[in-house]
Length: 226
Image (cartoon, rainbow, N blue to C red; front, side, top):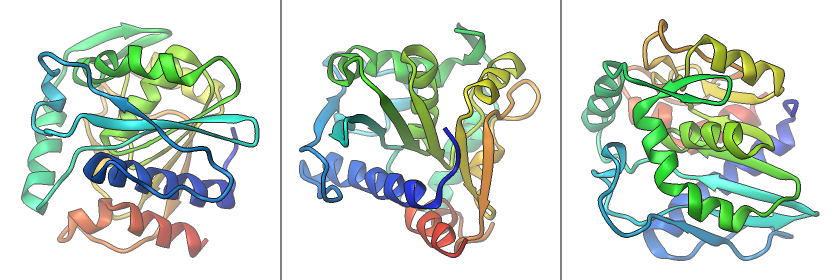
């Protein structure tokens, strides 16, 4: 997958819809997309990274133009302090889990493992476009590594070690970051590393307004300005 502005803006809108679906049970997708099929958290104990979010819808699957779109949302933040605390705690997390070509963050892996069966049941076997924002970007990356497809993420933290990151380059994956956003800077490098093609945008926000810098509308504004 290569970076394309129109595709990025479309996927940004699909990611916005994932938050709407989770909070209201409804969302409006761009013209030409099939009704979303929700990716739900199964009953039982939630993995550590998902316990603070009570909503059970973590994404959806839709289709358009013969392609299947798999979309994952991130956590719901209400304040800059909450955002900083979440990702600072994440930055201190070092356990790794083997997945595919390398090792990945244990917390992110647990989140993907909890959603894996529901995702695979909906995603089918055709051409897949996988995307996500924030924690959803990390889950989307592990989904891509597990079941394959094309990958474009927004505000992704670092997910795996250098071997895992190298596989992202080989897959020609795309990772979009807003320059003021701090989330792509965690967890620490080393042992975690980014991979794939990085496209920077310069949307609203700053280190003093982390929620705005991390928000999807800021990413959309930055993309529109390219």
